[in-house]
Amino acid sequence: MIEAAMYVALGFCTAGLIGLAILPAFYRRAARLTEEALRAVNPTSYAEVRAAQDQERARHAVELRRVEKRLDNEREKAAKFQLETTRMRAEVEALTKSHKETISGLEAKVAAQASDQHAVDMLSSEVTSLKKKLSEAERALAESWTKGHEDTPAEAKPEEPAEDDSGWLPASGTMALATITGLEAEVATLKAKLARYEPTVAGQMDAARSETAKTRLAELEAQLVDTESNYVSAQAEVTRLSLMLDAARLPENERQKHLDAELEKLSGEAARYQADAAEKDRALQRITAQMAKLQKDLSSVPALVDLRRDFRALAEKLTGQASPAVNASAAGAPAKPAPPFVPVSLQTKDSPPEDRNRPEASSKENLQADADQGTTQAQSRSGDIANAAEALVSRIVASSRNKPKSEAETTPASTGAAQDSDRKTKATKQKKKDVA
Image (cartoon, rainbow, N blue to C red; front, side, top):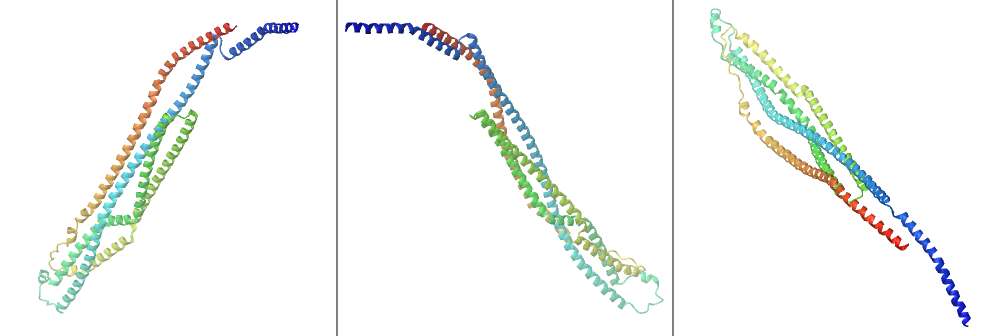
């Protein structure tokens, strides 16, 4: 029994001695593998630490340079869009100014045509009254001539001297001659008035035909105002998107894609607005060409041709009736011509055109006030946009100024990190030595 226990104890001691003999080999292998793993993962020398630092610094510099290039590209794009918006703003202002001048000229033409229409109405009424008076005078002249032939004796006395025939004329012949002279003066005044008011009649008919053109012009002006307001809103949207891009927290790629999409959209809208403005300019040119063509066509108006024909017939009648009266009175004393007939209606009706122009002047003032209000609103919007753009530029300048400071601050931090890493490596080496 004791012998068996001794054998067991001897075996146990032998196994323990063998284990103790083999254990250092296993420990050395484990330490070697651990050291190799640590060396593979962590730098062990000062050169390797500096190389790792330089690698990280180079990677950071590359990323920073990439971001700076993107920032420069965005700044160039922003400057380009700013120049484009400035040019488009100048074009819109020039178009607005030219359209306002065209509208003011058309309004002046409309006012002149209204006054000329009033004068033409008075002239037509005066012509009708003169025609009536002329017919009455012709009738009275015919009656006076018939009475004069009936009253003259069948045989003239031979002993009467020729001086008696030239010393007096019958009362009916004198009145007829005075009437003819007055009618001739009236015909001359009517011819002068006709020559003076022919352009006004043509202008009135032109105004009657160009009402559709004026309505079309008003529609184009309204569309131009809408286009200008859309352009101002697009500028505000560009500024807002720039500010959002500066303050966004999205990654660089998504931010760049979003900005590119918005810029393409805004450029498309700007091109569409430019096309609309060009189309409106072409429509305005077509309308002006149509108005010029209508003015040329008014030179051959049937109403004016009929009026000229009536005046010519009247003049021929008067000259044909006045010639026998002048031949009959050539032997006698010439009678005093009657004063020319001056219509009173032309003197009393000269003031209504001025009264008529008063509401038109008030309408012009209202239109001018509306235009001034629109310009003030556009100026206020442009001022807001300019303030937002200035804020964006100031923020970009501040960020560019703060960049060198951040780099100067990062260099001491990197040196401190290098020192800490050196300390850690020394501590790990000391631990490895202790373990060995």
